[in-house]
Image 1 (cartoon, rainbow, N blue to C red):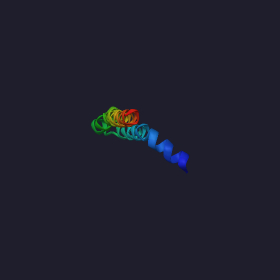
Image 2: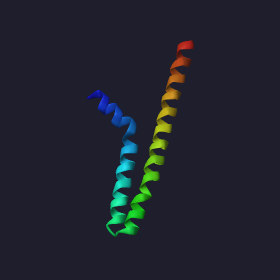
Image 3: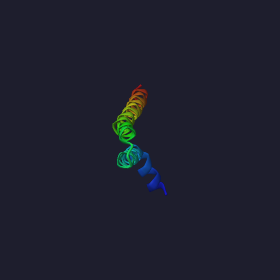
Image 4: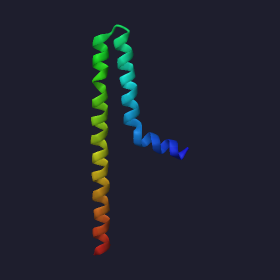
Length: 74
């Protein structure tokens, strides 16, 4: 169970993007071309948003680790 949870935490943006892509293709081929294009734009938006969140999270943990290291040296 922990492996599945870790997998979803790491790859949820990719899973969401893939589902969005599939939904976009389904809309396109069912005759709703404009809606399919609109939903297709979600794919890079989801991935960019996830990259921004992950970068901020890494910056936070990196700063927190540096602060702990600095406090140990005193």
